[in-house]
Image (cartoon, rainbow, N blue to C red):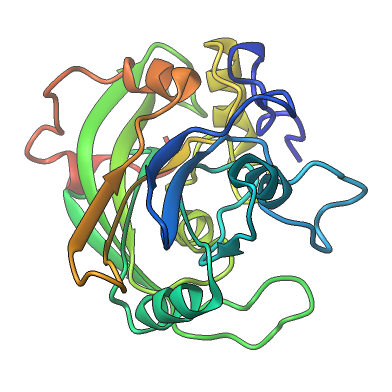
Length: 261
């Protein structure tokens, strides 16, 4: 297992405990914050002795109770929605369960997938939750690059920048769906490909390349449509710079490129 690929590099280290978390939107009922990569959202069985959690930081920063509406993996950055009262949390939770909260992610994967594809593959709930439930993720290819880094029998390695829109919210859904498609997420130490993770570490990119870039929802108090964006952090931006500004795949790339490259 490639145990070091998910750790943030020094320029994107977890902010010090007294450093404020970036607030993307806030009002009396709710807020959207920019979760840093490498910081756990809350205490859980996966914490393994950790004592620094985003939820605790947010309670101190806002000076009031916070109710997390959804979760992001420790290594994932970006938009996180929270409420300041139980009624708002309940309303947002129901909207989330009904598929009325739009979530968009940026992801960098190995290989050149087709321009648009959907993965419909049931997933279990993680450790201790073996029951599989329906899981659907829609993907759109945004750009491609080919780097002078050997991969298996090839002299180069191919990567794609994707927009991922999960229709369901299963445990590590995007990461596991990309593995299922053999387009492993870069920097994923649990479900990724160690060879490609090492390529990106050589380029100075040490984090998992999954970023919650946008949340769209209806404000439960005002009825106003909301769209909140989180800009990528410095290390994710370094990965984005590997892709030509408006480049996409050659017309036949999705059909011809081997997934394992």
